[in-house]
Amino acid sequence: MALIVQKYGGTSVGDTDRMKNVARRCIAAQKAGNDVVVVVSAMSGETNRLLKLVAQITDRPSEREQDVVVATGEQVSIGLVAMAIQAQGGLATSFLGHQVQIVTDSIFSKARIKRIDADKIVEALKQKHIVVVAGFQGQDEQGNVTTLGRGGSDTTAVALAAALKADACEIYTDVDGVYTTDPNVCPAARKLDRISYEEMLDLASVGAKVLQIRSVEFAMKYKVPLWVKSSFTDDPGTLVCEEDKSMENVVVSGIAYDKNEAKLAISGVPDVPGVAAKIFGALDAQNIVVDLIVQTASKDGKTDLSFTVGKTDLVKAKEVVERVTKDINAGGVETDGDVAKVSIVGVGMRNHSGVAAKMFQILASEGINIQLISTSEIKVSCLIQSKYTELAVRALHTAFGLDKAPAAS
Image (cartoon, rainbow, N blue to C red; front, top):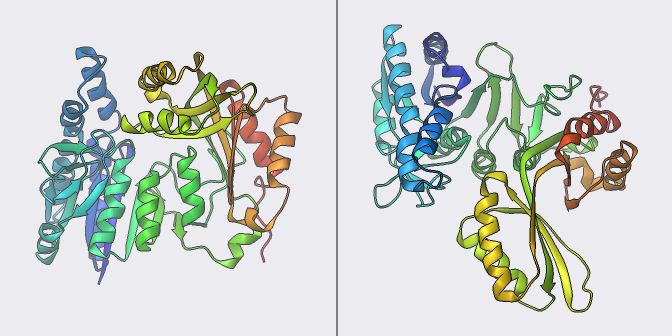
């Protein structure tokens, strides 16, 4: 008997008919001889609806109280899915995050899981129940409700799979796997049969929406076989797994983009030790994640510093940076929310030269200016004007040969 953790996103439980479909899938998996734990998100659009209610009250909400509000979406879903299973003749028990002791840190709205007490789940499985767990939520050491950030149900599912030593974790969504890029932007995008943890981690980090980055981190750390499948078809999907030699033959495996980027540029920064630490330390103290960073060469003891943050953090980041620039006697702070990050990812980059140069040439040939650049062993990212995003993705997809399936080795 295998233990399978399945996760269903908001579109998969978007209405009661779809919840009944989820129930059928869970029961079928159990009848095939598996123990089944199912993690569900809030119904499609529900989290946004709840956030709009928060915004109608205040534009600077307490993140603790906001978590209390938005965590309620998953409570509705798990109760309805458990009842749908029961209505179809199955046994099911639902649990909220605090009931199965998904313990997190206290960083509200983007908490990280510290540990899971799976005893209640194990006991329910022994009684042949399908266990339905609320994704996206947990509680901190003080008993406060916390949420894990957008896509957090993926992380809940993989963390549960790791804690339970599950044989597989299946992420069900409205797409049938991981594609070479967003099919909505590039019709030539292809579904991948397999992709390495490392590639998926980088794709998730640079904007691919199919999996949350922390879910891939968990899967990679604990070697959890991770499948991405469609809730609406029987397609086998994409397996996210450990890298093998054949994957190195493909130079670029995928192209991602992220329009949730904003740029801050500080002029006249004193070029002395400790200044960068002050700037980014202040941002870190506010739990603001910084992405691309570029510093110009020093001139007359001054330099310019540019970096990106998530667009939702722009207002808070600007306030922080303006305070620090006064302390360090820097010049002004300029912001730009009309930017996007386009990235190419592939483990094959390790063994092939000239990949970054080719990317720059392709963008230049399309008249697209590069504002910031970041590279790693298997990834190259460029910050460009947002309006050129789709053009850049399609051009890169074609130029790196992703429009066609790779030749069999």
